[in-house]
Length: 113
Length: 110
Image 1: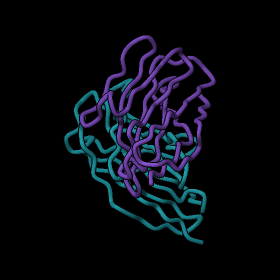
Image 2: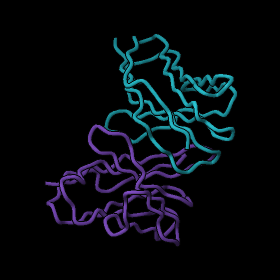
Image 3: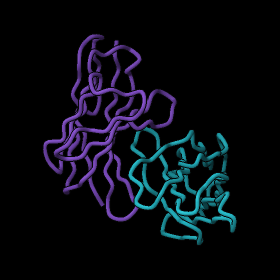
């Protein structure tokens, strides 16, 4: 199994500002994933982050808005840039563990005013 | 990736079996069926997965029809702590990208 922590757990931000979310895993993993869950909705994949290479973004998500860093095999950050109230969501990171299982962090709850 | 269809919500009495259906009529031969659940205010949790055979683990059983176009997740003795949104996801072996649908909101009542 993999234990994932995220910082911050929640934040309230002003529009136009940026927030960087950290994801730490207790073991080395090749791929890390970032998801967004808007209020009352299901999860949507934002991007896949490999160590040492550029993140791969899903349709509708761009690097300028959601830059991702992956400096090593246990850590990643997601920045939500130039925030608007529409960015209010839960942001989750996940990793694939052994076999077919994906493990998710507890999420970062973001409210943009 | 194949699309899945699940009922929006279901109720189940505590102690009874909860049977959650999922339709995946466009599943291809090498795609697996995965089940995750999300308890309120937590990240999703893996439950079980299967290809064509029925599977059982300490959490649940997965029954896949012979034509693989549908499956049922069974929680044999539901408890209040099983109240959650259950997601049925179809993807290839060693799939990395999980495409979440809308899921089934299961409410277990006393």
